[in-house]
Image: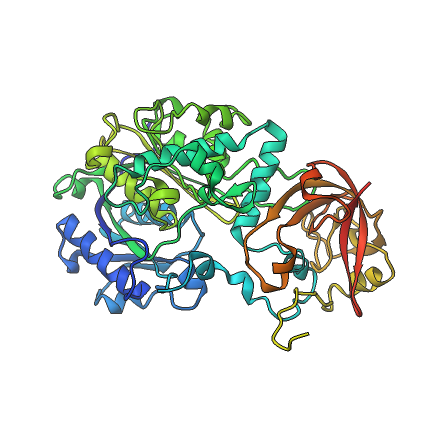
Length: 397
Length: 136
């Protein structure tokens, strides 16, 4: 018997603001723009929205991110579902999951899920925007102080350490990381939404400056101002709404934890491994059925290790798997078809989710993948710590 | 030294880590061991992260470990480190189990290898010593 949640809900609205070095608006104003666009896209009246889930990006940590106050800012009355969520980069997928569970159980009809971020300010670099590390100016107290004392700053360091471990264990190479960057840039050249649309070569990849070895600049995601909102509705309502329904066939999460102790393989085995079982089983599909991947790609390495943990290849074989260009346009496994976070825009888990909605609807224009019956969309946060997954389809099953 | 010069962040003990930093000043790497399940942990968590017991003893660890993984920082993040770029960051897995963020000394960045054996090597400041590691 199929899982009762398989195809029970659908994504019915999508709103995307201008992305990147876009100035003059707060995260809250970006969020309002995205929500307004999503409601219009879904053909709804504002009064039909009865649920709101919010997620702030780095602006949240800086003290001026979106939150529950967005309800009143948007004048949303009589909500039946409201929460501010944070499971880092896995939040977007999770918002769709909690919205779906609420809708399937009669707690809401149309739930808006919104992410907004505005860390960039004019005249400052992305590194300055994200460089919270430089705030450690006094004497850190206790054992936690050993991290800043060793110069361990930011996600770049955490992912560099994880990528290095994979390279040492499995012989993964910089050329293989570069293949991910090149393939995603090829997709980005075809996306009007992407921030980076100039093609790159493997030579460009190698020539890009080191951030934290083994990560080059072109291994790392962008930093963007902007917002994305999606609306989740019941599958039944979705059928009479204007956009092609994007059915939610499967949902899963995985949070392995890291004991920071002998025995943990946290650098190379991620929450995707746990989430894969749940999401495949709910959707009734396996990796061989997936037509399009929209995978969280804070770094090239994240894509490679996520593909392994979803069973597209064996553990340790992610490098050779991606090296032949199969992730790019015309490849066997179209992946991050809007350029992803590396070349498209960085909206945490809303980057893969927004592109997954576009591809599942068949609205990808020049970059549309012809066969898009089963779309895997993932979110990842922390240092491979938190993972959320959706399997989306134009067919309700 | 210019008054506005930013220094590297040098940790200081808090109550929970006091025995660790006391030991460090004497060149002894002090860890906590759960007396119920035997799991060894870095200080400052008052319960065992394996069995949740609060029964604990301090002991002097061997100081030996291996490089679990490492990275080389090129980005200008913290002004206190600008002079040292590019510098290495290593996760050392201690022989007793816990993993620790540190730096490797006495080795060129290009010669660092995953799984190479290392020994603690104390970086001494006036009122605190910080564990670094040297290949052996």
